[in-house]
Image (cartoon, rainbow, N blue to C red; front, top):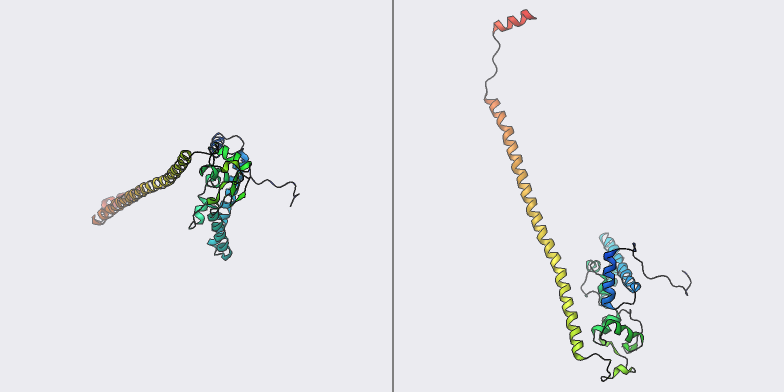
Length: 259
């Protein structure tokens, strides 16, 4: 169980410390979502990894007809739907298709920036830590707090904060709020297009492979038919030919004398 003063680590570090592509992707995510360090990213990845592991085990148990797995499946999908990570009509396959950005988008820091309460994700983090943001009229000072779907509309400035006044100079303008929301919607549309295109490419590749396979099968059938015809011809010729005649008596006598 361990000592309560020393809690266990809630994330897993990468298996290899020096991987250029992974380090580049992590740095881009840190910059995009305004994360303090890579530990926050690894926490989100570990949480997503746990959800996906649970979905894989449930799929295996459902194939065996486990009734308890049905209840656990509903509980998992309901939990992810309440978090806003998945739609309400999602399946376990949708859980396996999730990426870490879906988890980072549900952080309070990201939603404060998307709602236009801050100019940048870094400023959104500062506002949360200093107690300027509330969720359901409660002050939340944890930037990594995962906001539920029904809590999202209640994100606002703390009424006791100076930023609650619309005349405060640190508050973003209406133009900035519109621009951020427009960029976020455009980003969502591009992500949907990127998800659709690979499936179309896979479908086109699959059709090409099927055509090649059918052509190969037809070619093999033609070759086998040609071989069968060639094998039948000599039999027919041999059948039509005359039977070999007996040797003459003179040749028989010679063969007997030699013996």
